[in-house]
Every structure is written in C-alpha cells, then in structure tokens.
Image 1 (tube, rainbow, N blue to C red):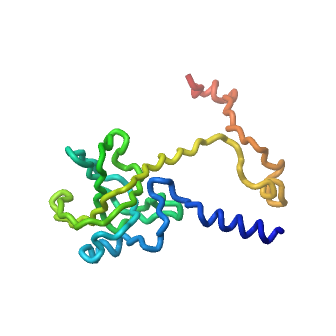
Image 2 (cartoon, rainbow, N blue to C red; image 1 turned 90 degrees about the horizontal axis):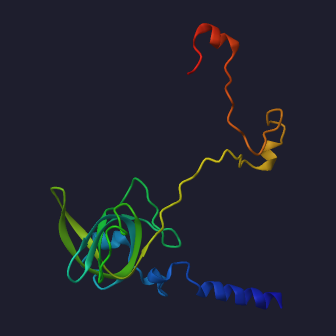
Length: 193
C-alpha cells in the first residue's frame, strides 16, 4: 500500500512543473540554450528556447514590444541567477504593450518562445549581434525583499548555549548598548548637547 502511494505521489510531482505557467513547457529537453543560439544563430532559427536575465531596455512599437535583456543562467524554477558575469545580450519580441514603468531596467525576466533570426544593433558605439526570441510567454519576477536588521539572534540554539558561547549565554534579542555620560565628561566640557 505504501509503495503504491509513493509511486502515485512521484507521478503527480513529475507531472507538475516548477516553472510559472507563462514560461512552462512539457518538452524541456528540446529547449535550445542561449550559448548555442549565440554561437550558431542560423542553425537554431525556429527552435524553442527559454532564456532569462535582467532588463536593459524596453522599446514599445506599433505592433510589438522589444525587450533588450542581459542574459543570466536560470535556476531550476526559471528565475535568473544574477551575477557580475554574463554571456551576452538578447532581444525578446512580445506581441503586446509592456509598460516601461513596470518592466523597468534592472528587473529580472524570463521568456519562453521561438528563436528568430539574429538582429544587429548598437550598444553605445559597439555593433552587437543579438539572438532573438519571439515570446509566447514572459514572466516578470518579484523584486527580492531587502533584509531588515531586527536585532534578533538567528544563530542555532546549540551555538548560543554551548561551551564556546560567552558568559552569560547570548539572549535571543541583543539590544544595542546604551552609552551614558559619566561625571568626567561634565567636568571636562565634553558633554553632548
């Protein structure tokens, strides 16, 4: 009985995609990598791909929006892994209006679609050849939340209360020290105003 439940659970999980719906596909193995498209753009025209990165520019036209992207590799669920190293840039063609105030420069985006013929463009004075992805779906990722300093000690309990912890043991909340003026400060004229 347990074996049957485990098999059913495994089949159910295998059928579920970890990718958000707009960028999910059933045939993961057929997707072309960005590197392959950058090196052999003519040979992969018409193939399917899922690429992601950071938005560099958004240009809305009469019939489509062109999103210029700085490419970064994707995590297992499709979010770009942003770093200081990139393999290059690419263009995403979207057949609807994308508001530049929402799709801002620096936001992470992943696109799924069909590879089209490469296009030449300029980055400052440099002529650049962009791989092009005509998107069926795009997914704009939420901005990462900033960490807030709370003063709470999140180190594991065993670390706080082991032999090496200072005496007395560190409390869960470590308040900032309060500096109180001493009598010497008043006498020397260095009392804070």
